[in-house]
Image (cartoon, rainbow, N blue to C red; front, side, top):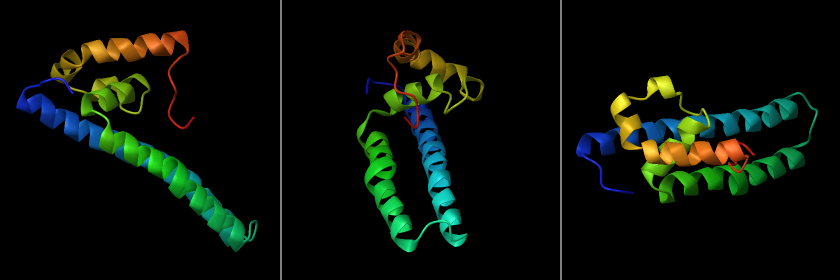
Length: 119
């Protein structure tokens, strides 16, 4: 992560935490559908256990690594470009501070080379 003033670092931490929460929520909603199927008797306990295992070693682990081992500014820029975070909820000061990363991710998206959330 490049050097940012303290207020920008704070904003990056806050928005990164929000992006993580939103992505984690999206994946947990999917897992919750499996629990609903299990409660309704549509799948057995073994299948549910398998799906929980797949969640733990798939989306859960991927998101944990992404948000704990990647630079905050990179995660926030990605979250903005992919609409995890809405641009209008981000301060202008922060948008300016990470403008080069936003442009980078936007160019990837326009070329079709950006992995979208949940893919």
